[in-house]
Image (cartoon, rainbow, N blue to C red; front, top):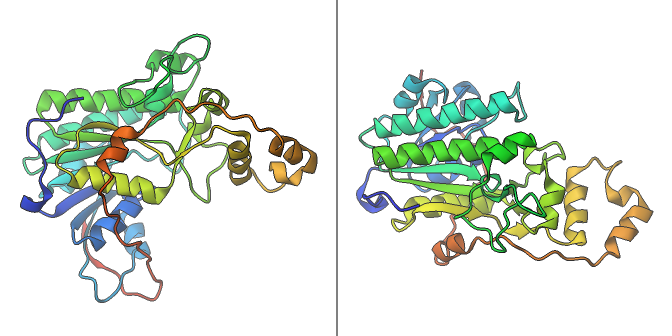
Length: 332
């Protein structure tokens, strides 16, 4: 994708940004980092009271946080949250009462992407949008002999085939592909300066085998495109593309490739309950550990690596329970 005509320069613009959905794992981490970097942050989420109860900070930090109750399916609530902001960090979070992907959830994500980009186009102060997508919007295609992209080298220039994803009920890939394409179409039509981050499987302590990203994991593994990303690296990537005026288009974001049996064993141990993990079955574990098979990595994040070569990560933020809350303004 080509960059929008106007380049984003954080040194000459307002330091007020919006994070939506700020209640998710990525959104929450971005919120921490941006506040400690001195930005005023509009936190847009469904239940603002929960965020106010969770966030704590040091008395020495002059943190400015405004909390908005915003629904990505409610255009007017998005407009309220964006008012006065120069940039938006947007990621779609599954509702707590529907924690998996299906056809309906895919339709909702596409509608949300349309609403968010339209709201950005209508907000004069917005100079840049950082849109969180997924590697699953890149890797899935109808090709032979595998179901994944046929080129030997997979990167940001590739798109998943949404029809193929729907045919095999790969709803995570279908949703991310159509939502991102919808966002890009609106961004280009309306002149919105947008950059997307296509992240791998986000690792977390509560990650389970039921994560919708993992549907089709065996095929991803065999084809050398099963990738994961740590939260800190994902946040760094978002901050980097936000602050670097040369950033443009799509960026594949991952810092680990799962392409050996040893990698699979480690991943399975973190995904499965202790009673079901390979380590709880000595014969299975021994058999897997003796398997030295390695599949060729066929996916590249060179574009992001080049952009981040001189990026200095922010200080790790730790919120202490005994600290007073940050300066918070509630907006309903």
